[in-house]
Length: 224
Image (cartoon, rainbow, N blue to C red; front, side, top):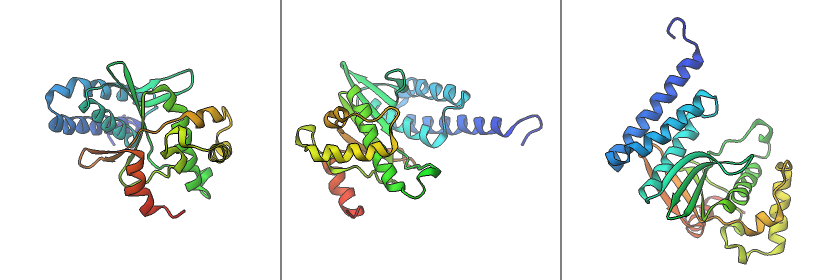
């Protein structure tokens, strides 16, 4: 470490370096005409980092998800406020329509050490319930080394969910989310439109419908 510098300063420099490398890789794949939009996203990440509100793993996934929306013609923003308490990871707008993406890294806190799978299942449910009402399309994004454990009722359209299924989702969420609790109405009307699988190494994104994600991933790895 250089004299007069703190480890936190070095970490900030590493964050900026890694984000800049990521942007250059994306520009090389997408074309230089995307540089301005990607730099705008990067600058917001740098500001969040200066305030101690960004970590490199999650930020890299947000930027890759934002780039995926840019390819589809969306204008993008990151860490966008939706209401007084809710901030979404990626916010895209195109033709008056809104596409929100929430990134799930698979991280579990120490207090969930003895029930990590249940915790992550509840977390996925809570995100679909809370965020999808603000979007015309809502997606969860996750790295390819993580598997999203999404309960079957939320892989179906709202009209196909039964009362008992909603009650079970509510019971699951109430274990972890009480301030505020997840409302029955949110669980009833929420909609997951797609799952993004992120390959950070190769700057690649695969987008699956909920049905495709269930068929290609969940049925092969989750034993229920």
